[in-house]
Amino acid sequence: MITFDRVTVMYAEAAQPTLRDVTLEIAEGELCLVMGSTGTGKSTLLRCVNGMMPTFTGGTLAGRVVVAGRDTRFYPPRDLADVVGVVGQDPLAGFVTDTVEEELAYGMEQLGVPPDVMRKRVEETLDVLGLADLRRRALYQLSGGQQQRVAIGSALATHARVLVLDEPTSALDPTAAEEVLAGITRLVHDLGVTVLVAEHRLERVVQYADRALWLPGDGTVRVGPPAEMLAISDVAPPLVELGRRLGWTPMPLSVRDARRAAAPERERLAGMTPPISAPATGTELLRAARILVRYGEVTAVREADVTLRSGEIVALMGRNGSGKSSLLWALQGSGPRQGGTVNVAGVDPARQSASQARALVGLVPQNASDLLYLDTVADELARSDLESAARPGTAAATLRRLAPAVDPTTHPRDLSAGQQLALVLAIQLTAAPRVVLLDEPTRGLDYTAKAELVRVLEELAADGHAVLVSTHDVEFSARLAHRVVVMAEGDIVSDGPAADVLTASPAIAPQIAKILAPLPFLTVGAVEAALTEAGR
Image (tube, rainbow, N blue to C red):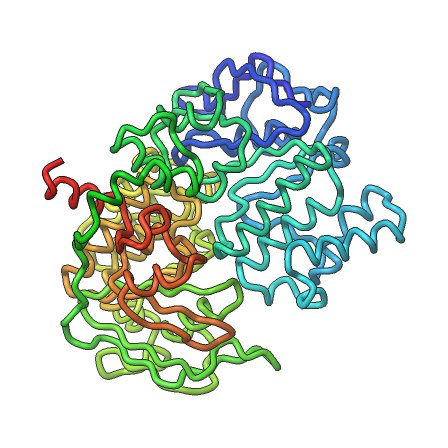
């Protein structure tokens, strides 16, 4: 179905090719997982499949890419649209209509699908992705996760023979991600659809994959069974990381298989207590009472109470559309708020000037690119240092920790989604506000970058700042949070220690908790520390 024949991709002014002499074949009805660290060329590989590289991305492509018998050198993207469906990292950037139902139908309209068939497919897609209640909603009113489901739906509805998905679950809650991946897997098994999916949250996808394509970062692509590639790759989900530490062979890819392999470890760990981050006991930095946020007739946040203390890291979780982003913007002061109070150091950020509010509460939004407007990465970093009254080079040092491969002369819009996010994190964290709010900060970040982000946020907390992170990334929450707050339909329904909340429901439990249940371990590090203490 897809053939890469000695493909080399070189961007202007790049020191080395992004892809070098890549030769591989992907069969019909195969689900291939594309994995690698941020900036190794995963998105470039995907763009080769529908001809966007080099037609719309610049650079040069040597070699041949053939999809369903069509050579992309002679078939531009518009002539591949009936064969290849694409979902990019930024769903909103790809929308061309106003409402959910119109967007699902648009691709089929362009392909000349008969109206009766089109209507049937729209209804099927609405049901598969849980979008029926949103069919007439404006796209800009949806949460980031809901927008991502619409983007996936618009590709699924065309019944393309090849689906190319770039970070398809990055903004989805765990349950929605499982539903989407289950729907995609049905297309692979039942209809023979070929799927290429690039995803940093490997724990969500790897058990569905037939093969894995690993990009180590030197331009090459290594292909093999997922277990073999994960055993040698520089990126791995917690399940595989645990398997490596414990010497499991063969490497399990599902929680079910890992539980069987972990039976001896559960016996050794029985009765042991993992190290638990103590709740913060610092001074109260933020108190919000009875926060109410409405958008027309829709109530996004319903009289929510939030308290944050210095030294505390809190994860805000919940299904897509539960009100998490609306609550963050209300706390920061820029978003709508029809009721309630916010108190940070004795003042309401909404009533302060922009510079004063930034020193009190900093917010990194879901769409990081919204905050990037200068011509180079270096310009953005220098402006951040200036506006934050920080020592020159402060923002650059933070960026090097999060994404060391970013070239400072690059235009911010030319960065990958993960690199853009790392840049905005560096810019916002340079101001070191007393309260730091982050909305889905791990979208597009690989495991190494997320581990570094954990260290950065822990340092902020140790310096007396309060951190509130809205996230669907349960593994990130397990490593980072002291406390977890869960929202549902605008209400706060749970608020407690991370170990208690994350193990209370399988929907938000991390992989290690599922593997070792009923033992109270959340992370590989906690297991390793306990086994070391036990003398292993």
